[in-house]
Length: 172
Ligand code: GDP
Ligand code: MG
Image (cartoon, rainbow, N blue to C red; front, side, top):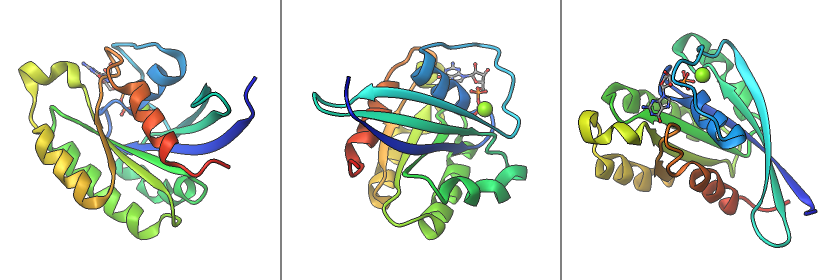
């Protein structure tokens, strides 16, 4: 049994980019092709060891994230240690939305919040990619964000995403 460090997370991004699917993959290792879309927000937790001495308890708000819930964002980021802003690599417009939310987060969120940009649906890259990895990655570097392309469907890079953020957080 490891002592725990509890961290608050929230996921934000345009609708249907796969926020709920990423959280579900990380917490329950499941994927569902026909998910009901999230109304309001769901709260999930997961605890994973990050080294021999310490486990991180992830308390995650999976938000609806649509435009009409935008005014709720401060409620989440006020207490957040980290934010995952998600876009869909097959929808260029979803990256533009993600960028505008990142701008707001960097302006309003508490000092020290760790922000990650996740380009989801990597399994569709071969047939339907609309955002080049290098473009999103250089934007993320410029803004000082962690960056991963992920697939909630195949699980590629999902644990890596959460673990990379946890490793960047001050542990307490
Ligand atoms: P949210 O609105 O951002 O929470 O998106 P959801 O998690 O509800 O997912 C929206 C749709 O995209 C659903 O039909 C999912 O099955 C699908 N989806 C989510 N993640 C992936 C992924 O990594 N790959 C593929 N191919 N589909 C995905
Ligand atoms: Mg959702």
